[in-house]
Amino acid sequence: MVKVSLISFLTSILLMGCAFTAEPVRISANGMIKWSDGRKEGMHVSSTGSTLTFANYSNAIGEGPIRIFARIDSARNDDCEYFYDETVIKRRLKICATGEVTLFNHGKVVKVGHIVKPSY
Image (tube, rainbow, N blue to C red):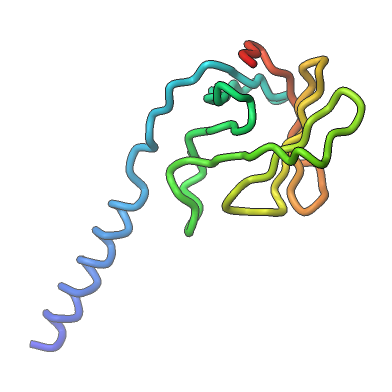
């Protein structure tokens, strides 16, 4: 009896885990970044340009279905703007007027790319 209950409990935990790795949300992309590895990632740029929204495809534990980067108004440098991930504060994006994009995590470069279709 205990063995059956344990198997039933473990099966339900497994099924719950599968529910959390479901298809990511769809966003209405009005911009796109082409990363140096050739991958393209759609983003929604707010009408003010103050937030960038990405669908989260990482399936990382504890991260939601979307990633929102908010502009850091006090951190402009030359022709570049900086954005921070609202869920992971140490994850930043640097976007320059030339279209160059750099993704940082804890101050280290993770990816570089270029805005393919700027909209703001």
